[in-house]
Length: 166
Image (cartoon, rainbow, N blue to C red; front, side, top):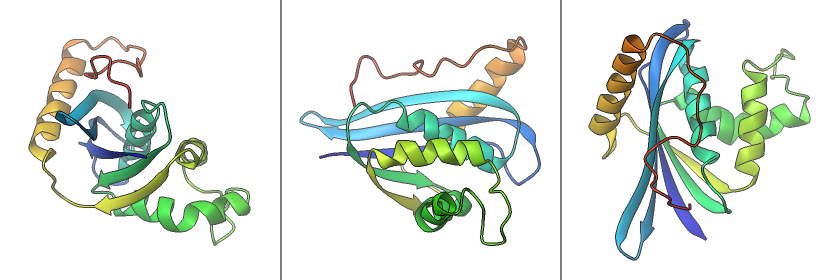
């Protein structure tokens, strides 16, 4: 089974809704060394959790076969939800332990379906080998967004993958 590292970065910080950028990188080892695929984009009026969920979903949608995923994020919340609470939320009709609707239910439902196709683990880390590059890519995406202030449809197949098949 192919191992794919997914690295997620977002400029959105905290629970308040704000405009920001995200970057994800897919990385796998080939006979010629590491191969990567990346995408950066912007989002309007989202929380950090929403931005992380969107980036993770977009990254997983790039995969075409069952893989072992190692998901690198600085979001303790996203990792905890996926690894500890996701199964219970499904069983309880997307209600949390207090009986309340899970925040971002539709995004979590999509993530759950996408993760079902793979084995996965989360690694929570503030920095990784791509951190500086991802931060710069996210900032460039924000700058492009400001220059092109016209809303655009997100093309989930856009990015720097150059025909690679993960």
